[in-house]
Amino acid sequence: MLFLQTTAGIYSQLIPYLASRFLSILHPLSCILRPPGVEKKLRFNEYPEFFIVFSKSHYNLYTTMSKIRVAVMFGGRSAEHEVSLQSAKNVIESLDKQKYEPVLIGIDKEGRWFLNDHSIQLLNTSDPRLIQLSGQQQEIALTPTGSRSQLIRMHEKSSLPKIDVIFPVLHGPFGEDGTIQGLAKLANIPCVGAGILGSAVGMDKDVMKRLLRDADIPNARFITLSAINRDSVSYDAVTAKLGPTLFIKPANLGSSVGISKVRNNSEFQKAVKLAFDYDLKVIVEEEIKGREIECAVLGNDDPLASVPGEIIPNADFYSYQAKYVDEDGAALSIPAQLPEYLVKQVQDLALQAFRVLECQGMARIDIFLTPDEKLFINEINTIPGFTKISMYPKLWEYSGISYTELVDRLIQLAIEDHDKRGKLKISMEF
Ligand SMILES: Nc1ncnc2c1ncn2[C@@H]1O[C@H](COP(=O)(O)OP(=O)(O)O)[C@@H](O)[C@H]1O
Ligand SMILES: [Mg+2]
Figure 1: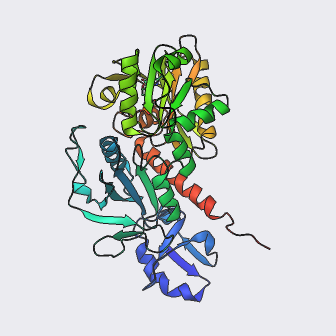
Figure 2 (figure 1 turned 45 degrees about the horizontal axis):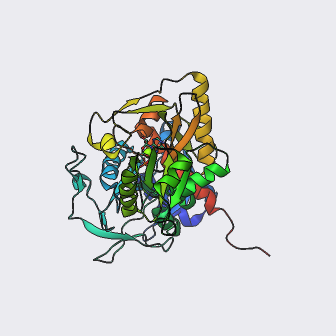
Figure 3 (figure 1 turned 60 degrees about the vertical axis):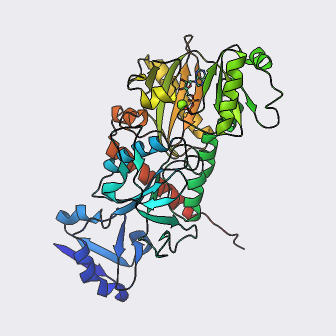
């Protein structure tokens, strides 16, 4: 039996409407009240004059009054475009459809946004090399003007229904680097994962390593090349400081794109040129000989660290080929075979790095473990891979959090953080 009761007269006309809405699935902690002509989301705690009383058998219905519209964004202007498509496919499949309504936004390599029909979002999904966005959908844009229209159709100039949260499944620049996070912030929409600062820091290996160094968190020694010193730094000078084997990387990229391992001057020259094809800043690192351990972190103020996993590359290093193309390119070991005290050290280090690097929501922290049991942070990924074989969801699965629950928690963390920030003062009170 369902009873609806209100002390505010203006809402009394809504009661029959609400009663009918109760049969649909609703949003936790909020309910959609739609008097004719009005579309506004009201929260119970903001409208204490409005009460809903219902029998125990309807208790479960209370928690869900309308589905949360999650804009899943994928693709993007990035060398990791295809990886993102594979990740997004899994995130979309894992969304609890009772609670969430996915709104699929595919971004092509030129940066155009398309609304993707669920059935036609991707082509060639079974082959990671051929996977691509299907191109015939409606072009859309997100207006950064705050609360009124958000998503608009570019050609018709009409708005689409509001979205409640953005889940950027975008790897690399123009997605993982603070750009989408900035747009979401301007548009006042919660966004899963790190904010602008954490995303930008996590993307830029040079700044990331400087912050780690400042916090005394061990990481490979390095030098940074840019237009200023690119032509004046010689291979001999670098090896004198960092040793004979070096890793050359574009500062802002991922998935091992543009990365080389070098052992002599001619490899060094080629590698530097290649890395500068992808970025205006390049880092040169000493080699750390060790096992590659990865740890997943989940949370905002009080984050959790997963059991660590291990990547065992079957190549010279964990290259793009080994990651995504060659099926036998690397083996994953979950959990990593480590004694308990090292598990604890890895988790503590991962949580420390998560905080120092201003992360939120999620991150995968990649660590080297040397034969003499020293730990070095290699890098941090603020939007880790979500493909079927990706470490981040697999580590949580092993730690007891299913893919669906993980996606659910990430969305709730984004909403929680957004609500908290929404309560901050934006002007001085006199
Ligand atoms: N300093 C280093 N010492 C040894 N191996 C390294 C070093 N830096 C990178 N690698 C190897 O290269 C891979 C890719 O480098 P990484 O910095 O993680 O770039 P990406 O962000 O593209 O994943 C690592 O997983 C590891 O196998
Ligand atoms: Mg890496």
